[in-house]
Image (cartoon, each protein chain N blue to C red):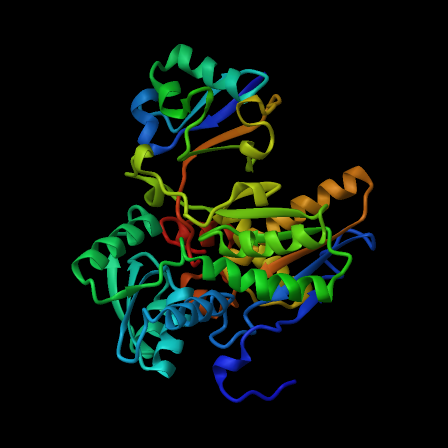
Length: 316
Length: 92
């Protein structure tokens, strides 16, 4: 059905498209789930709406409430749209080293942005948001890193959609951030396809993001469940950019930079399947499209230049 | 077995400021022991109770060793071992 009562109802049901040119053979195939085809253009619409609805059911959120959330962009944009339609205020705690487009979109939707320092990246945003939650007890922090509704939105949505569209699926590759996508999709797929492999692609940032962090105060999202995963790749900006451009060049898909990191891991998985001589249907997530990253220069100039420009930025 | 080990900023006090060091060993544990023999103190920051510290991630050629045997994960000549603190994700 292509008619919906409102934008919020148009969530999910995203297309899964084959990648005939990037797939290494007819037996080892790659499939991209186009999550940019969600109401605000990213996979984050799923957890954002699910967390809001769960908080409404619990009575934590009422008309006029203010939502507080640490986000480096997409979750904030999703929450901002839903908050506007549902009559909530929104305060986003966001690292200052994110793309200009994300800030502009959040502002356009009327969200208030509290910046956290670039050094430390999202960990620092989480820390600041937790502080703000203490000093503003009437604000409602949905907290995507620990909210079960985040993973549930993928358990009940993304996962079943994937299996319905690709019953022969053998591998799922997703980005590792809050871990909600991997944990939710992973749990669903494990229940229905016990042999499925769940692979995480984690962005590897520049020095600045890791710089001053104390190892004893590291951060693992509360949602994270390593038992769901079969493997985990760390992908730097250069490879992420290279794959983002390949996806556009060979398959026509204009994706965001984190998708390049995920594709890099998916191609690694494909290569291993080829080496083993086994067949594979590898599905991965296109978390968002490239529009929000144009100002970073990701799509122009040499790869080395583009990677250098991204150094110190949160690109996923 | 020579491998290159990339050291995060926070641990460079142990390597005299070096961003990466050469080391040898057939497993991640052996590589860490080898570095420890020249840069004392590093091991205690990475390993706790014979396991990798919860907030430390180690990758061999970009693959997380926790899914490849942890400290027993194999390394081969020419591999790159990357040590990183755990971070929260970006746009998620």
